[in-house]
Image 1 (cartoon, rainbow, N blue to C red):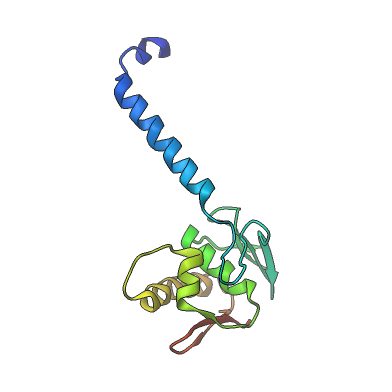
Image 2 (image 1 turned 90 degrees about the vertical axis):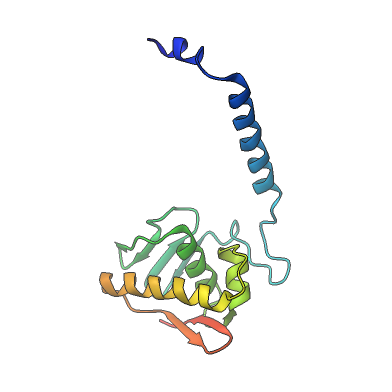
Amino acid sequence: MTLIDQLDDIDTDELRDAIKRLLVETNRRKSQPQSCPKCGYNMKRDIVIMRDGFTIDIMGGANSFVYKNKRIKLTSTQLRISHSIAKENGRTVEYATIADRSCRAETIDVPRLIQVHIYAIKKKLELAGAPNPFQISPGIGYFWSA
């Protein structure tokens, strides 16, 4: 059976619905602001951050967190959290701001959510022999200090 023959077996209503869902999601993503209206954080403008031996490339995927030429695999959320904190270079970033920039999660316990992600990042850094640049400001958020 050729590829063309297989196309005859596709339910056109199902295909049309899938294409509509894809277009709606694409338009939704395009309509999202590229920078935070509160703080001006802009992922498109500040794509790559190099700080204290670390390189964080927000558009580079899961392997775009590098310490001294050693790649450390992070999830996309962990990468966005790291980028958000590193960009502020020593200034404390509040839990809610980190969540707005990276998780887009609707949860009651935002601080705990961010703490869990930071804990996972710290464990990955430890396994890679990299220092921990994430320091906590109790009750407020995190700051970068390598």
